[in-house]
Image (spheres, rainbow, N blue to C red):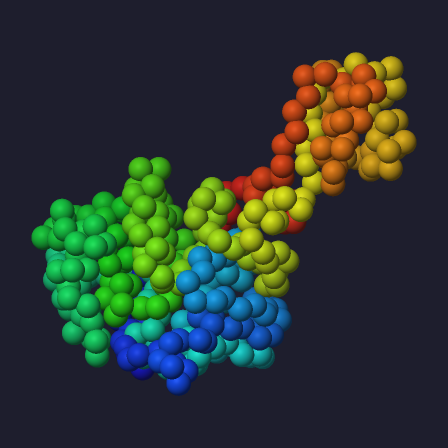
Amino acid sequence: MTFVMAGTGRMALPATAPATDDGGMNTRPALEVRGAAKRFGPVTAVDDVSFTVPVGQVVALLGPNGAGKTTFLDMVLGFTTPDAGSIEVLGGSPAATARRGGVGAMLQSGGLLKDLTVAETLRMLAVCHQHALDVDDVIAGAGVADFADRKVGACSGGQVQRLRFAAALLPDPELLILDEPTAGLDATARREFWRTMHAEAERGRTIVFATHYLAEADDFADRLILIRDGSVVVDGGLDELVRDGDKTVTGTWIAEESPAEVALALGLDPDAVTVDDGAVTFSAPDGDALALHLLSNGMIRDIEVHARTVEKLFFELTGTDAEMGA
């Protein structure tokens, strides 16, 4: 197996064509995980994880510190193997798919030679592939042309991240694995990075990325997989997850009965009601019906109804603030 130093110093390369059916079209899922588990002594980092990612989907992995995201991605890339269960990448083992260049990885830190220029780094990495894209095309497509002649040690954080992204693209992988790809970038650099990633997704690449920026998951992913204590606790489309959650009803309370009394009479949990200086907030599965009832009975005014946000969903399930680590 050949690995090239990028990201955390562990980027899997090179390439042959993916497994296909008799018609020549790839029908395998990009990623298929069945009961995968990984233990380090008494600590279970990944615990019975199962899901399938079809080709062309963009998936966000979310979870608090120590949730098991990075350990899971290490198994997907073939850096380590599951202690139980199995993982298939593009129809083969993670290591075999890495060898043929079917997967590219952009990992968190380290692994780049500071005395080489950006272009020299990419040309060095390209010779490690059996089949690499034209380096000049990668330089242009990954947005590194403006600083291709700059030494890596003189690059900004955002430029280094773009270099790592360009390195991940060299074997023209079908699956991109991104571990906290915008960590340490400012808002402008993150916006530019995701503009590039949108273009790659539109070209049909499958993308799995771990992030601690909920807005990135909300804006970019087709699907959210939330991991806590090594296990999957949420797996679904963002719209569906938010739509199916409790809605928040807020307004100015004007009824004689207390909000808690009304909540109890309606079969709601009194703990789902908060009052702050006359402003009341209810959380309810059917927020629209609740709002209509409160309005029609003259209990509230200045009312607003909000669907559950991805941030609220994450906090409800993990008790962790919006900004998470890996």
